[in-house]
Amino acid sequence: MWKPAERIRFEPARGNMPTADQARASQLFSPVSLGPLTLRHRTWVPAMVPWRSNEDGEVTEDVIQWYARFAKGRPGAIVIEATGIRDVPSGPLLRIGDDRYVDGLRRLTRAVNEASGGHTRLLIQIIDFLRIRRRPDPRTFFERHLTLTPALLARAGLTGQSEPAAREALLALGAAGWAQVLDPRDRQSLEFGARESVNDLHLPHIQSLPRELPSLFSQAARRSRDAGFDGVELHYAHAYTMASFLSTTNQRTDGYGGSREARVRLPLEVYHAVRREVGSGYAVGCRFLAEECIDGGTEVGDSLWYGVQFALAGMDFLSTSRGGKFDDAKQPSVGQAAYPYTGRSGYECMPQYLSDAQGPFGRNRAATAQIRQAIRAAGCTTPVVCTGGVHNFEFAEGMLAAGDCDVVGTARQSLADPDWALKTLLGRADAVRLCEYTNYCEGLDQKHKQVTCQLWDREDLDEPDIRLSHDGKRRLVAPTWKDAPAGFDQ
Ligand SMILES: Cc1cc2nc3c(=O)[nH]c(=O)nc-3n(C[C@H](O)[C@H](O)[C@H](O)COP(=O)(O)O)c2cc1C
Ligand code: SF4
Image (cartoon, rainbow, N blue to C red; front, side, top):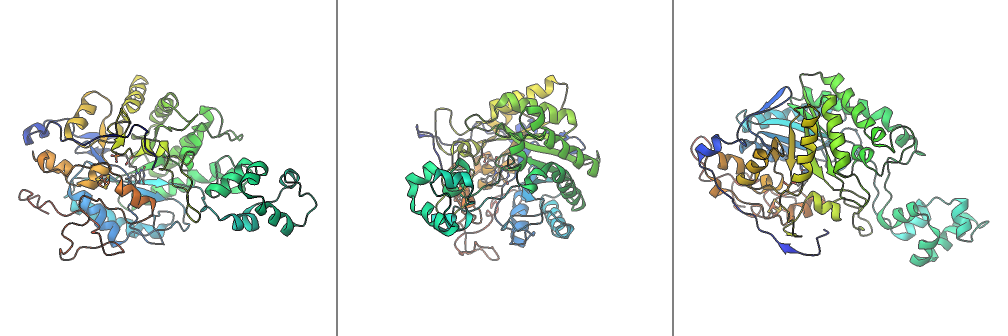
């Protein structure tokens, strides 16, 4: 992963630890309404893909155990990982693109409800993504993938050659020659793997996205309601389709790209379709980027305008993230796919303990605060969730007290210790296992391996009935809180 040149080392801290009385009186542990949905607390576990599904995208026993473990720590809300709205093979990522997924998802909502004793509300993040190919070896690329156009053949001095001869000659040019004759898009496909973009209007299925996505999202949202989720989070962040519509890099010429009014059009149309389908009694919000963190990308000026449009449209909550784009991802090795968290924007999304002077904690706070202010100035009370590097009560409470957000998301801290909020509420913040922001978990995600935390995945491996990773070396869920008070001892 990309790291800032400064490489300053940061360590997490416990901050001021509240007594149980202080915690109970805090904002963090006070209720908040997301439209029709009330959370008991303002603690939120944002979406995290743990690679626990199967090749059919179904809810497995490992998926259930993973989320039930978070639920035992009784956060205000858990958002289930990015779940695909299309019924197409996408490896072990959860899917919600057909009614046959509803039964499995219902088992998941029941298990979470039971594990949290009814304290935690459960949402699901729904996502669309475009096709991305693995980086090809040059021979395969020139023999099979590259489209030979007259312009390319002319640039390479190969006009009139037979196709096999032209392909062989192009392959023989080598890196310096490819740099001269290939157009930027073909070079990108060769060096990184072909990646579809919302700008590819020459491809019929990309052209038709504005016609297809509203119903794909609304049907997925209907299924989420049928499966018993308390709400749905539309994934408008990071490297995926909807974020690409919002991005300044969206140059579509069909009324859905270019100006920011045009860029927000499809995200609003998707939202309205979802709302029509599930009605006003069901919580619907989105996750979007406070900043894209790429050269020339969307900055907070655009995002606060988007936030206001989403709030005015009637979304029940807005959750922010930052970065996580393909645009600046590192070149993958041959045979691997690019991963959108390997460049500077990836660092901004999941900052690590080796950082710049700003450090990895609360990097999304200032931009989110501006978005919230703009929403309030527009007369909307829509709650805003802020995530990024938060790992203790003092920091979380400080964000709420300053009016920077209404709900605090903790992804890796919840992975390091799913009981962190419960321990804090019970006056036992001293017992919290603090995330060290090593990004070991993110490295597993990058390799599409079952995600665990290095602080606990080798602990008590001889416990009866625990489930282990495919290689048998790691436990898949955090150990239970051993000295939990009676009633919380799970
Ligand atoms: C293993 C892993 C998987 C993630 N998967 C998702 C995802 O499915 N959807 C999403 O919006 N963010 C995803 N994220 C980003 C987190 O939700 C969060 O924004 C990020 O980790 C920064 O917050 P933190 O500092 O509290 O960890 C993932 C993060 C990790 C570590
Ligand atoms: S592996 Fe654990 S300690 Fe390291 S960043 Fe992930 S959650 Fe934090």
